[in-house]
Length: 69
Image (cartoon, rainbow, N blue to C red; front, side):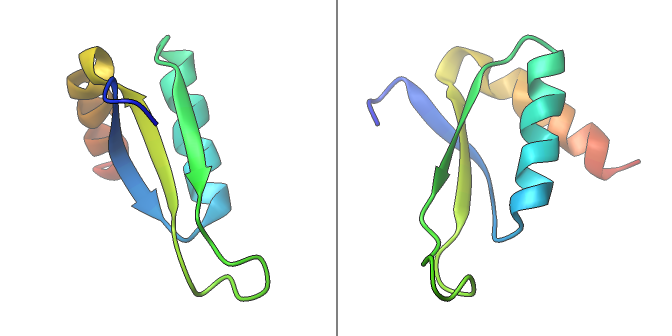
């Protein structure tokens, strides 16, 4: 991953990260999911969500608003 992308969210829940990714896409923010979980034991590793640096501030705000609902 190059320096233009910033990790904005991390979890071990694949459903949660897909919901957040879709919410960002609904606000015209492209994102990439990078899954580092072990395929045999989902308790090891994490699933990370990245956005372009120029969209990170808006993405953080949207995620925070969603978590406060």
